[in-house]
Image (cartoon, rainbow, N blue to C red; front, side, top):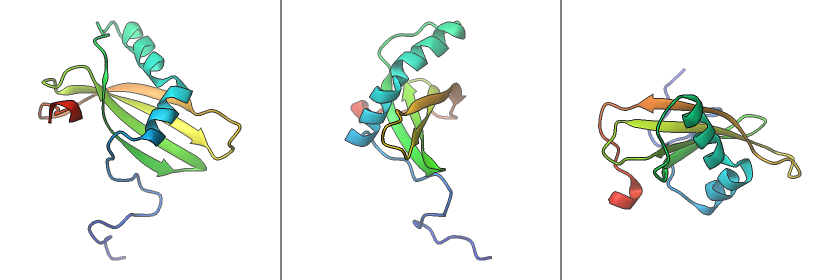
Length: 115
């Protein structure tokens, strides 16, 4: 099979990175994502809570919509947090945080607010 053309979506694959928008803000609030991040950091013994800032997010269609939201507490750090949220298709069910993890990048993050 031929590889996908650049700039074209691949069925089942995560979307390209997106900036903060109303949709992800509503999902994060409904899933209580910031509180999940705080609990994760407490459990991991990480000294947080300088206000975590939104970095970016992706979505993936999987019997609902799976979000991977990236947040950081320091624009000069190479460490950030990924919060996984699942939003089922049924409108009466709230989105839920399915995981939080710490990730590393090889370069310092540049948060949207500092651009």
